[in-house]
Length: 268
Image 1 (cartoon, rainbow, N blue to C red):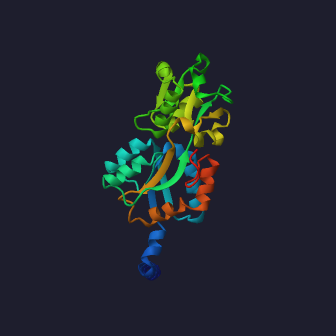
Image 2: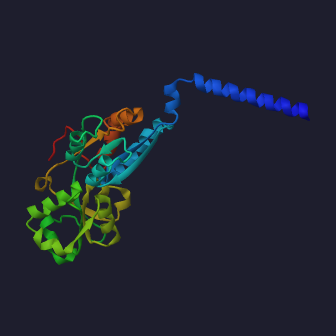
Image 3: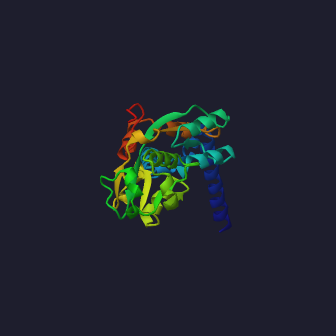
């Protein structure tokens, strides 16, 4: 029994040594590819679309791991500047990536990837044909918008309401979400009867029970959206690869499915 035990132990040590030698001989790039991982910060309007883009990318790159953290662009910018571990920043407003570059926290230049739209959405009211000015009517109850101070979609909602001349009159009926995804949740749950939300969220199957009316893009500034590598992501191969994928035809098809106008197309 001792002889057999020693033989098995010796065999195990030999196999382990061979495995270690093979791993050492494996190209460094190949070993890294087996465990590549990044975390990206993305504006909340991208929630559904980005989940699909990541899934499509990982279908062709199953060993890569990509996590996404969603929030308002302004808050995500602050987190990155305070050292949050994100390799890529997808903003709903191109001004924020530019700020990251100006402050020395970017690993490249901003790349436009989409133009966003806002809509009037409700879970309980038929919104077809509804105009922004109609929201002054009491039947529309409380109206949810994202916080204009740090959420680009909230800023555009404020612009649309001001353009319609009803911003001041609606103050007591406005409900503020921290980001556009939370704003959509307020409208979906009934905490608000109407939400001024991203078209990309309204087009997701999860919102299919409601109805929406587009807000004319002439009444608010274009939502030019860009992404940028962070300083942390500048030398990360997966971050660079995914940045390239976001500019591919496959990614653009997904973005267009969620109502985003693609870079190079007319803004209005």
